[in-house]
Length: 442
Image (cartoon, rainbow, N blue to C red; front, side, top):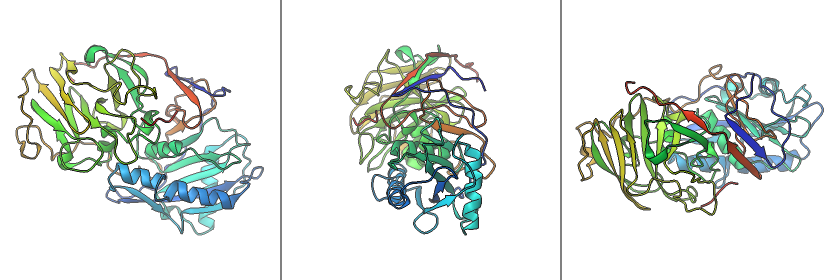
């Protein structure tokens, strides 16, 4: 498939572009209301390449996936407020190494997946015993041109490890984000906050692990909405003009955490970010995201500044946030969003729809019956991975490549994580739709 010019990746060491990937089926999905997702980690040996120290790697994997802190489980438990977490599928959740009849060379992801599942079933670990399968295998001979790989909306991840057995936690959190259905998270630079004249796509957002923020960043409010991890009084689904008080997206206490605003056929989601627990140490302030249609998994960060970028570790935590007095406007759709106040613990946002000026006083979310509701949930994907066979899309993390490839089968966009890298983007014009319709991972 022809390479897409959308992004350029320039890792510390640049090598050949990645080869096209084969399609795979998604792992069986948990029920939509299942709060625990069973994870099976499988260490894999090839015929010509074996994990050198399986015992040491097994110990590290238990910590990486299921540890009480600094793990995949602790991250998602924190950002979802315990709504979804992970547990070991069989025993301690880590099995193997299993030997598969396949040479490592060529990095055949489809065969690695199929043969490992068959080997696990032969050892008494059937596919219906886990919701996610994470394949860990030696990387040297495999020569994969990505740091990690995951099915989008499925349940499979591929995590190559070097001789030292080290794994990028950002890559791990990122790939499981793909399993939850998230796309790579981009930045839309909208001069002076004008949403109606077209914005320029300008790199990744740095507001989520899905957009270069590292696993020190929490998920964005649209990502939480996609999986129904923000519900009830935490979301004000705006239907008429009003003024709203926002509390930080993460942290204790009650109140509205996100505004969900109509923008023609799209949605505009507004949040307040501030450090809480182990996340968002480098992110602060009011942020807005454009949601195409009702697909909250594919939102993009709106940046009204000319050149600010949250990836600069020396920049203030709110360098590209919407400061007090900032206004986002779409004249064709008669939508205006103004940040009245913006602090660490609270913000006030005024929303005007259909040309009707918003009242200056903040609404009482729980009592709002005039169109700005907090009980209705957006019509997004349920909190579940897609069933087996429902996903043929893969998304890559990292790789020694100077070109990003977009795939419809085995696809997504490459995004570099782990180790030193430089991410650049070619600016692309985003045409407007019809009116009718500071901790950093470097």
